[in-house]
Length: 431
Image (cartoon, rainbow, N blue to C red; front, side):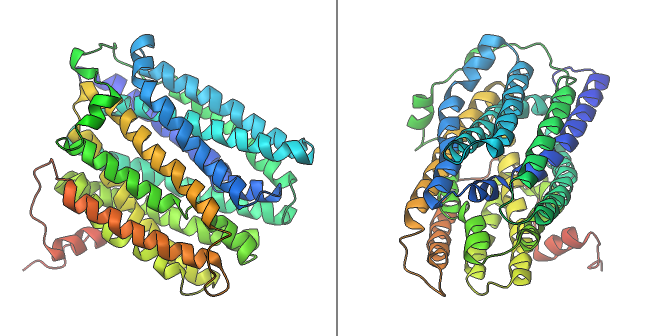
């Protein structure tokens, strides 16, 4: 922990937990409801695609410079603070969209959504780099699993509350969105206050830290981390091809009310965050890349299951499985990056990772937005066809992970019975 005093570490971790609580309530009110807000403002599939693609595309460009900005300002904490302040302003802008004339409301919401996502993404690498200063390598998976479980439960609970609020106001009524996004603005201010209480050790640039994006890309054939990054980008494209249109399918295709929409979309998030500590422990034990590869076997099944029935209880059950699988992927990615990159290079490497994966995330919704109204229908919906396409692409992307990415962490041998023991938390196979 770079010689940091234990008291400073404890205070910083305590501040990040309180920040996480405020952030998670905000996220529960906002992040599952930006697309429904846009639909209430009469957005079509292409507008949804633009909303979901512009943010990662612009974020990718910003990520290429974020490490240089940190070096210029000589403070990761200050970059995080600036990003959060911009995000606060974006939430205010989104809230104002409900009061604007019809022709202006949707463009303003799209602009606010893009600014919100870009600012949040740009604050990620310096925040993650700071967290790496506080945590020993052997505890990162468990700590992030615990923290993510706490914040994730809150996200799910308040996402459910948000669905109830919108249900009370009625489908398409904008007052409910004003309540959600206005409250989220206040909560992000609270979150920013706790972020300012994090301790930052003196910033010391390292000569080996500086490497250009061109040099990073040029090492694709020889660098394990570069291979991991580009596999992740392809996976991001495959997932986001359909990702933004689940809400469109549920609300406009199946005509779910907000309560059923909330039940389906929140169930997966709740299980995902509940599972993160389990998968974090696995990532600490066997390595992040191995956990990611396990996840890429489970994730392509999700869209295939969605094609079987439009029943909301069935879809909620699928989302529970989805949450378990995505927890593995996210915790595996998190641990692999910390294990594969030295502290001196971590901010820049995380930024380049976010930039490349952001490009995949940007093009997925654009292609999906173009395809969505043009695909042949199965079971009465073109979205079912899109699900089959995204499932196929996820298989290809998962195969690339297995083929091109190697684990960097020595790992304990794992037997099938060990996996079950970890899952249920009991040693029932003792002899």
